[in-house]
Length: 298
Image (cartoon, rainbow, N blue to C red; front, side, top):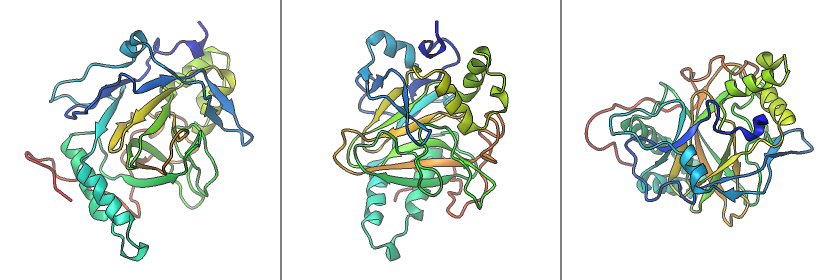
């Protein structure tokens, strides 16, 4: 079986409802699969637009049954979640103000405290970033400076920084559904598959080069497309998840908040520093207290 056709046979990520979250709908009709990637003129890869809905058997193999209320989300599962509407509405109230009067700090603090209340695995410090993109894009990831970045699991370090960032969670703040495109294989599995295919340098490749090398070798590797309704999010794995945004078919602006950690230099190999505590940041979210009762309100 070619590696790109072997989704689900190795240590693939599985989708689940994150513990202690309740959503109005499950995964049926929410997840699509495509037939691979296409390389753009900039050298980065984007998903092919040949999506099809998963049949019940495929969906059953991909989705892990929700765990009990005392469970923690394991690093091998990607957890669907939903934030309170009051937090999303509070963000929009600030966004609609003039830049001189905007104050997003209370909104971001309330969001982090809510996620801690739900016992999601947040490090001590985390960056919160909101990306706004136009409709009809096959990729929304951008490198420092605004250039398109394509499918990746780690952002390259900015020129003035020694650290790169890696997404731990994504939340749809927009008023319209959006999509997250992802590869269900962890970076270490990409290394193993490349080594098995004769790529002896796989262990030394930087994160960007690893992803590009994998897709160069296996362009028919299928990807998943997960729909997120307004206020819904997806918690990723600290091991790293190759992903991108997809706004084709949308009518409104795409507004997605990401929670990111500092993971060291962007040139490090996949298993170095992944999932470590985030470093200091110009806009950091301090940990909230985990206590019984309701999390703080905005």
